[in-house]
Length: 267
Ligand SMILES: Nc1ncnc2c1ncn2[C@@H]1O[C@H](COP(=O)(O)OP(=O)(O)O)[C@@H](O)[C@H]1O
Ligand SMILES: [Mg+2]
Image (cartoon, rainbow, N blue to C red):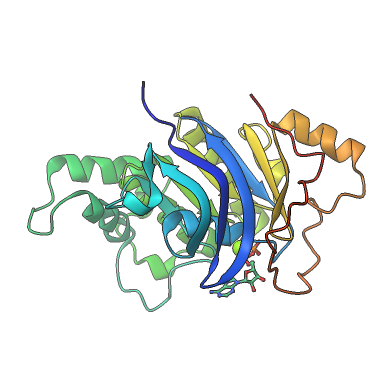
């Protein structure tokens, strides 16, 4: 029996003393594709950054492949595609070089690149359909293509879980369609993914579980079908309104208030 790729139990995340998100409970099984939804400023990125050790873990349990977060020696098991866009235009590297840098996490610095490393890089380029651009400078690629380069780099680390923060945001419609197809291929290959997104529609077929964050709290957890039902029965619910900006930073007191009664868990 292998441990779940990622388990969160009543986890809190924030910055220093400031708790931004509280009470996150989620068990990600191998092959799951979890969509994290919620308005801007609700804490989606903070959850992801907390899992990655880039924001502070302030309470509850987080386990990666059965190992508690604070005992992890390395996060090589996580592939990460950060929010905010593409590679800087000042990066002088080819597409292949950027993707190959993903292999560095997997070998000692003194070890040379092996044939296996090169094979994995070529496969990652193929999955994002950029093999034919491999020798070009990344700065010559469009924003959507650069996003695919970053996905390929994360894939090249052969992660147990691939975490992406708004991978389809800020790219044109055509690139969004291509990116959704890339994510579809990854899902088909059984890649475990955690994806922050505002475009659930495009990913509806591959998402196995939805987590809604609102004001630093989880106000829904369930399958896509349960989420559709939730929207139908909570037409004024705010989780799917993503255009409103957050009014104020969230500091959640340790109150004993129950979570939204709509919060359900999939078995
Ligand atoms: N480095 C930081 N230090 C302090 N507060 C932060 C930091 N980054 C984000 N925040 C605050 O955390 C809250 C949630 O932000 P974020 O997780 O980025 O939301 P989302 O990804 O859902 O848009 C916001 O109020 C934001 O101001
Ligand atoms: Mg964010």
